[in-house]
Picture 1: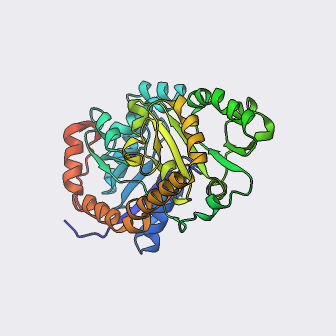
Picture 2 (picture 1 turned 90 degrees about the vertical axis):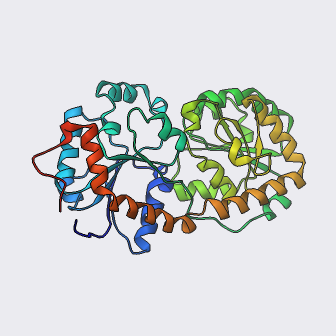
Picture 3 (picture 1 turned 30 degrees about the vertical axis):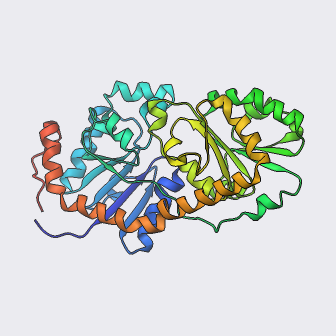
Amino acid sequence: MINRPLRLEVLVNSHGPHEQVRVKEPFCGMQRLGLECRLHRHPFRLEKAIKPHSLVIWQRPRPFSWQEQLNILKWIRDRNSLLLIEWDDHPKLFPVEIQKALKAIDMAPLRLCHALHTSSKILANSLKEIQPISYIIPNAIWRIPPLELGKHLDINGKLRIFIGNQNRKNEHRKLLKSLRQWCMEDDTIEIIIIGDKELARYLPSSSILEYPILKYKEYRELMRSCHISLLPLENSLPNNCKTPIKWMESAAESVAVIAGPGLYKEVIGKNTNGIYCNRIEDIVPKAKILQKDLKARLNIITSAHYNVLNHANLRCLLPSRIKLYESIWEERLKLDKLLIERLPEASTNKSFLE
């Protein structure tokens, strides 16, 4: 086998601020470290986007027909390339129409690839019957400003509460009653809401600042101006397949987190890096306690910031990520052999040789 250097071709389907942490920052970071890595945004032409002898990472393909996805896989194989599908959410979290489209083609994007590229071991295990081979690449964040306790010591009259969760309307409804009561009894709080018009509509206008979905830089800047972040998430297998990115961002911006009951328990620990709640209905009462307990809030913020700086720092994790990609590339013949054993229909007249 010819010893060809690692080359990455990253196909990006989903545009928007949500891709910043998972796609743009890590791959641009690897470019800065000298890795040959190109990012291609949809719509793209495969013949121009993919060079032969490449490790292709396709971020969540849109549902094609089974045959079209199979043809793409065979086309990539014929160019002595590997196909990893970057997939970071459980399919049950997708809109109903996308779930139906995926089911109608027998989950073709997940099946018709050499392996999955995901940040969650729980997600990889839950999809094992569909795609038995997965590579776990932990998510991390690029920008971690210095610890900032000053904004908590000098609140300047208003305690700012951050609610910037996407697709959490059911969870937000469970916060509504206690949030409304808090606003009515305390005029020193200001609730910052991003992207949930329904929640904003049912709270006193004098207590809220409402924003649409923001660009990632603006989102982080707004978060930085806040003191406490509310992260409600129902406890379910699909939700627990997510990565606690919002906790990482809050910790990086010196914002105290109140979260639960899904996903965040492990990263929060014994209320060391935030406050964990067994019920969503407990989140606002816990936030009210943390509002008054400055010492506890400062301890949580300090611990969480230290944790994210040392364990979720993309700058520190990039070398190990590159090493993993290199090991995948070195195993390309073995991976392709396993693919053909699993899916003989992906074979072509050409063998996977160089």
